[in-house]
Length: 375
Image (tube, rainbow, N blue to C red; front, side, top):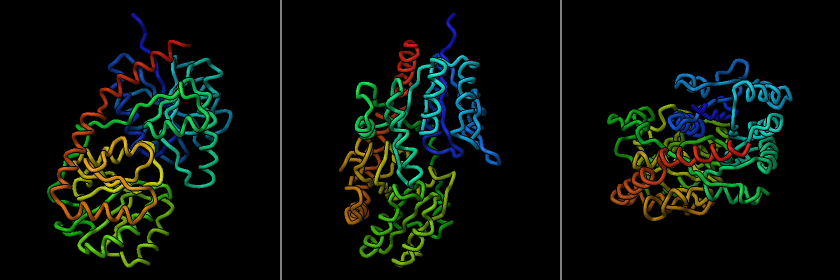
């Protein structure tokens, strides 16, 4: 009997968000197809690694690297030893740390390497440097998976051979999405009336997410629809500057920044309109989650957003950075409860039919075996 193919996924994270949920859900499914998954991540002193903890809770094998010295050459040797000692047949990297260290360790062991590219944020000078390094090392991967056609175009422009880049979209398991709470507890917590129009989003408070543009669009929307409230769930270094803009525009009682919430997918049911005003995206997990809650989506036409949101069918696409267009799209949906309901149903049908984990898992499993067979 053939031994199962051991596929290791390496990601540097102390936070369990959309990408981490994608990875663990996929690995729990792919092991049913004869693949033996291993999750490798970095641990930092005094910090929990929720991804590793949840992986172990799900019965997945795990291994740890030293997060306090992420780019230390000793981590390359440690990763090399993990690949050898665990009998890894393929390494899959997520993000720049795993991409760089993984490529070096694979060169030392002869293990083939697949890199998954979810997008680049460019949120600060340090991150831009690391993302430049990431783009360079993607050229050396045996294969690259882009989470959207939009991201694939960026990867090819970065110098990666087009024949090495395959698109496999993010997916969502509708059975894992929590249902609505009829008591609308988040509205109650934030002091938002049950009958008010609620427009919201979720994500890091960082420049590429363009929450500043959403605040400015909110000011315009409120001129015509003063019954509207806005909410952004998330944390980040831009909080203070966003709070200043909210105060400057007189939106303090209408624009809410409640912070990060582990129940955010349940909160989406309380929204009337979901908005994603980003300057850049790979393929947004939160759009998939909003559609899973049958919410209509207003999103910028960047990255993989147009591959998920059908303009005029399940939502409205607007040009990136155009605050007025964002406001007009929100007002269009605000004016028609029937349109919101129809678009929400269309979005739910789209993710159910086109973004399920079954098809995604089959494609990854086929790719794993092809790459491992080249070694």
